[in-house]
Image (cartoon, rainbow, N blue to C red; front, side, top):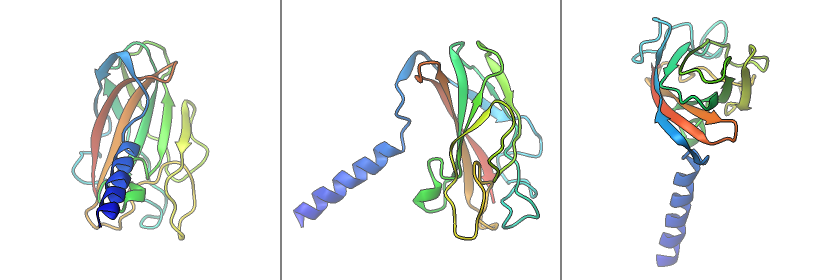
Length: 179
């Protein structure tokens, strides 16, 4: 019994470590600030047209997000989309991880434009870091818009800044809302 407890404890610790950003922190790390640039997104309820194509006539779009307090060494922002209510595969970036290269070096504030979900061809400055966790019924790559079918699941995005060496320059978690 003790042997099984130790094994479970070890597995639990490994699982927790996998959820943390592993990049070293930059010397000028700062807490980022984020808010929605589009009034349709309020952090409480996901806008009706911005869900996955299983529950919509088309795949929804990611929200446009204003990010500020960005350290001047930041060259890119990473958006890690998650369903905090669903099974583990959909947490910690399970709805896709997308990188956004800042248009100009040294920007302290930027509005990340909205981009389409469930596609492989993203607009300029965007790149897929990790595709969303796929279900048997689903097709597509990149970002998976909220897809719980209206069960009240909580969706979030963690925005992380990185410098040219890959060090973490800042981070913030933003509630996208429930669907």
